[in-house]
Image (cartoon, rainbow, N blue to C red; front, side, top):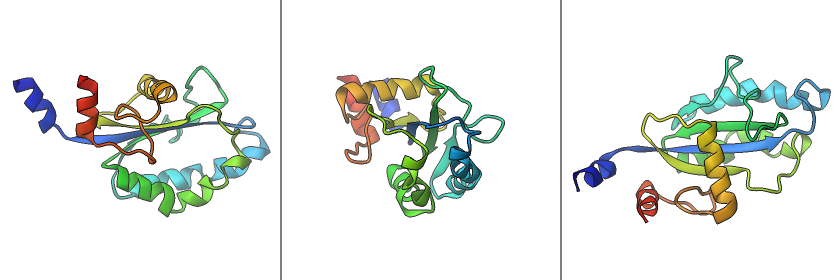
Length: 164
């Protein structure tokens, strides 16, 4: 019982992953506008209320990080204080103008390409975590283990779900 109480007293943050399949290599002129906006949008995310962390490499982005062993898949992963602040960044900032143009740079994904889940405060998910959540949501749909903005769950629901 002591462990159970400790788990519920922990604080949680919201992790997100989204992947996209590029239509051409990043150095192709077709991708220039996307690449030219990466630093601006990443800086906007980092300055946004509720932002905690994002996956990046030495070049300050994650475009060379591989997921699913596919060099044409790019991954975006970050951690936020809560779902509402992530939603605000995604749909109520300049990020939206780039998001609306996604068909210019990315193929339409057949499989679920994004997932949200809770992580212990100060945790930083890795690519294996992202693939686990994406694989899970692809098979099971929205659950407290992996979900989307359309079907939101609380950290408490996620903890209860994992105990079943």
